[in-house]
Length: 140
Picture 1 (spheres, rainbow, N blue to C red):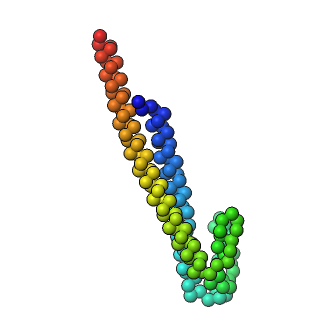
Picture 2: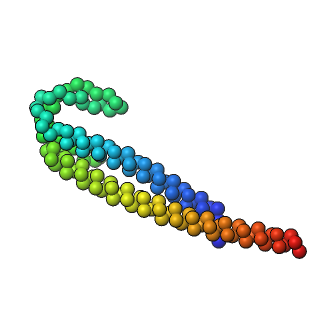
Picture 3: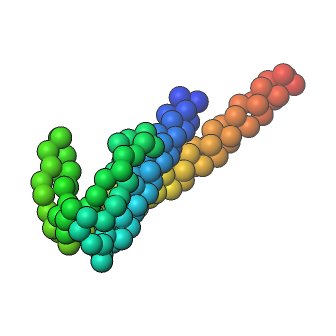
């Protein structure tokens, strides 16, 4: 027997997965921008002018002293100097991992959506059966 609680739980699960997907999509966009920025360093000369991001849309004027060396965040506040090629490989790996996670999330959304439809059909059928019983009892 399907209850409204089960329906609500599945709906909430779908909403949580949709929120997760939105966060993953935001991370993907950031990684794609990072890849593009790293690729744009190709052919940049030392001492080329650049706008260095400070965060929140703020930048400071600076110079690219060595376009082949990149400070790469490793997580947990740690970072390491890598070559541009190494940094690109790291970003590509992160993009690939994120694509896999996004695909799993989409699959989970589809699975729960199918489950929700099944539960809704079951609940709807039960409701009609109860209504039919009430009409029969009322007629006697």
